[in-house]
Image (cartoon, rainbow, N blue to C red; front, side, top):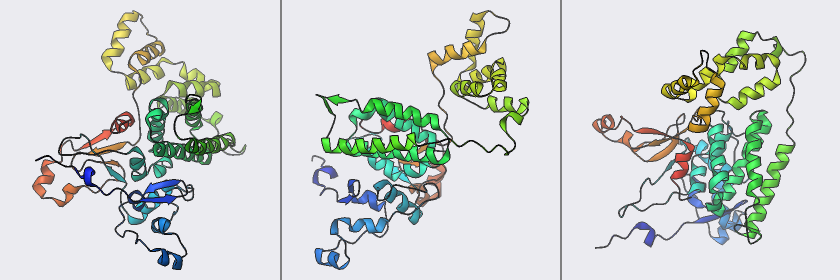
Length: 369
C-alpha cells in the first residue's frame, strides 16, 4: 500500500493579513493555548473589526525587555510579544532528513519568527550571531529566498540599524551589512529586480528606511569632565584590553585611535596569543620552523595562517539543536523537551551528546536555499 503523506491531503494553511502583508495564522498565534475565535461578518461588525484581522487582537504588540522599540504592527513583533506573554521559550522544530515515512519542509521566515530573532538583535550575547546569519544570506543566498523570506530579512536589517543607533556600538558591523545591501539592490534580470515588482517596491522602501537610520547615527563623545578617560589608563591595563581582542581589524583600528595602543600592538606577545587562539599548535610550529629566525614574526605568521585556514568564528551564544525533540533553541532560554515527560531511564539514556551547537552556516543548511 503506498504511503500518503499528510501534505497530500492537507487542507492548507490559514492566512491573516497584517500591516506587512499576509502571514500564517499559526505563526502569529505562536502556539497560543487559546486560539483566536473565528467570528462571522455580523459578529465582526459588533466588535468593530474585520474577520481577517481577528487573530491579531490575540497577539497585540507589547514591549519586551530586549526589544524596546519593535516596529508597530509587524508580524515579527507580534510573534515576539506573544511568546513572552505566554512564558514559552522560543523554539523551532525542524526536519533534519526527509524520508519516505517523514516528509517535511523547513521555512526560513517561520524559523526566524518562532526563534524570536527580534529580541536576539537587542541582546548583546546573540547580536553577532544574527548579524552573521544576515551576512551569509546577503552574500550567497538572496537569489534563492522567497518573497516572504526577503521581507523578513529586510525587517531584521532594520532592527539591527535601530539597535546600533540606540546602543552607539557595532557601527562597523552595520556598515559592512549596508555595503552588502547596496550590492543586493543591483541584482536584476532583464533590467528588473528578481521577483515581484510590487514586492520589490516595498523592499526598496524598507532599504531607504534602513539607510536613513544609518545616516542619522551620530556617535556621542564622552563628556570632558567624565573620568576615567582612555588616556588616563596605565599601559598595563591597555595591554590587557588588547590581549582580549580576537580580530586583527579591531587591533588596527585601536592602533589608529591612540599611539599608546599602537605601541602595545607592535609587541609580539599580542600576535602570538592571537595565533594561539585561532590556530592549532602544529600549524604555528610549522611556519616558525620554516622562518628559521631566533625571534619569529608572529604578525606575519598570523596573516599567513589566516589566508590559508581562515579565522575561528566566535559567538557568545549560538542556537542549539536538541536531538531528542529536534528543536532549535537559544542556549540561555532553553526549550520544552519531550523527554522531560518520559521515564527517568529514558532521560538518563539520552543525556549524552543530545545538545549540539549550531553555527550560522549550519543553521542555513537546514533550509532549501
